[in-house]
Image (cartoon, rainbow, N blue to C red; front, side, top):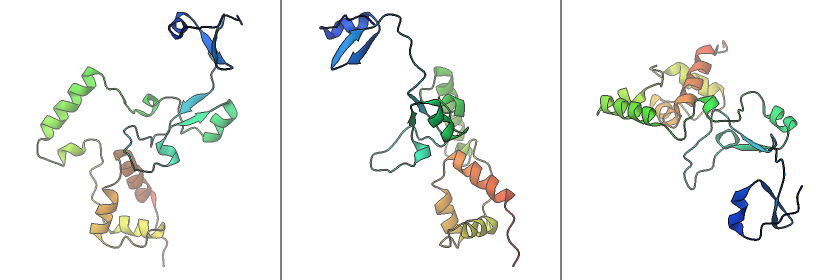
Length: 169
């Protein structure tokens, strides 16, 4: 490593450098490391709202080595696009979104898009009660609960209910 210290902050842009002991030092043959890096889960929330507490899978996690990355598990990816999450849509994607919204008009069902079209019913209530939510007793309570789901959470919920086999009394 070279000992050239950048005194003028504008000079930092002239080449690779590291921050050591409070100063930017020029480095020769800089090779970026693989770590640290951010990892993302499919439940990641891109547009976070103030005052809302987000869970671990809804936020990015920084890993510092391969062991930490492997400990997260295979459902964590190093990019959002690997989960199909678009944070900066291109013109084609924006045009497609606009066309879908236009097509939907005032029809809220058309605006659901990729959310599965399945009626919620007693089996869904029974599933929630069997999984620690005894307070969900009516369809209205079920709809209020499910209305908070993202499309991906709804698909996951519906798949779990479909695979669920209630215990016989």
